[in-house]
Image (cartoon, rainbow, N blue to C red):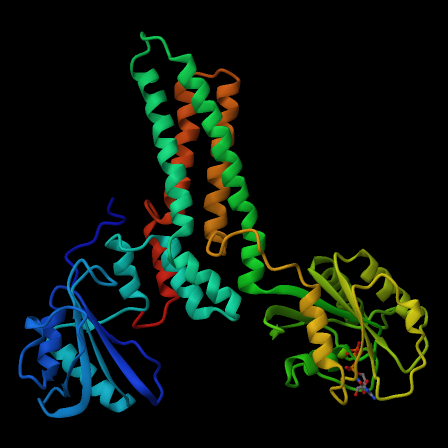
Length: 463
Ligand SMILES: Nc1nc2c(ncn2[C@@H]2O[C@H](COP(=O)(O)OP(=O)(O)OP(=O)(O)O)[C@@H](O)[C@H]2O)c(=O)[nH]1
Ligand SMILES: [Mg+2]
């Protein structure tokens, strides 16, 4: 099925590599005239035009500026529709990564009638031409934006179309069921096959369970892509902001000797022992001395309560005091908590044996850096376990996918309930159609134009 109506596509061109100086710079061309455009800006050393070349073969030659002069030595490769990334004729020139030479070659290509590609337009064409579904297109951005090896691995697997296969299997089952009910609506005089209706009810139950399972993967997919939240809490002056800076490796938060320095929460991403973490520095917990501080402290508590992990910071150079009581109680209520006993460069006055209930207790000095990497390891180890059960590529990773899967599960559940209550076939069909439409949206079969536009606008030019 065609995803969206479009007019005759034109030929697009872009520099696909980054803007700076680099070893290699790639010019990418796609559209009906891609090979002709490439032939006008490339002279093969063997003297033959690219139009005569076999697809996928690297051809050595020279890139030309718009005045026909040689501007670079490069390699060219062509692919022909539909066997290409975009599903159209494509050509690529692998030049040297000189921004000025690439700009000249691009200008020469534009003079031949090609136009500059919009961000993500190559991938958008791949989607519109049915080469990939929408979850695969999103996996392309996920690979480009992956912040950890694990997230990249997952996105690469999703690029293989795992979610699409799950959705398509459900879609096929629903079409079968819909056909049965359509027949019942169209030929009311014929007896409904009760056995077949029973089979449909069972199939809907199984499908609902598998869609609910898919929906449940979003919590883990989101952690993998966006990172788990870890709130750094503790009494004023314990060294929370200093520890945030030490874990990040740069001075992000303000540190001063005055207690009550941090007011608003400060959130920053860090990759700790391979795990993406969103570290949140918070205002010190104590009886507030001003309205602003009170608001800051209530944000600290909210951060502790909404985070996957609490990092409770104690000043190891002073005994445990009443001020630490609230930290201990927030840590106790948290899903997971680790303790950081800071200021190990000063004489220890804190009785560590009183810090019970933590997954680990790490001695650290934000000042000297001692123990910071052990703390990073302890944080990574305490974060929700990376998913070993779900095969790579089968996690939902964004709100759009989760919403569509959720809606599909909901509609299948309603259809199943309707059948159990013995409603008329046309009533069950409404929910089945709803589920079909939601699954279609998940993979982009019937995605709205503005949704697709929003997705592709996130890409870089040339992808
Ligand atoms: N000796 C020593 N001093 C430290 C250490 N970590 C932090 N400090 C000092 O302790 C003071 C408070 O540090 P901050 O990081 O601002 O403490 P905080 O917990 O963020 O404090 P609030 O924002 O007020 O809640 C500063 O003077 C830091 O230089 C450490 O490991 N050793
Ligand atoms: Mg602070």
